Image (cartoon, rainbow, N blue to C red; front, top):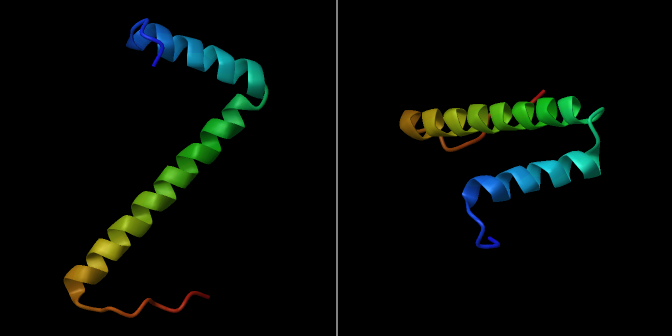
Length: 62
């Protein structure tokens, strides 16, 4: 990015994020990001399973 190497750039980016967000909200941000990734994986697996089953219509959500 800036030409100073990958690890120093990553450290600088993490410090800037920590300063902007603050240490108090960082755990909740990480938790939300983890839940988002987990939900995305579950939907991707469900979609892949539906393609293999041959069903093209989405199941009704309650």
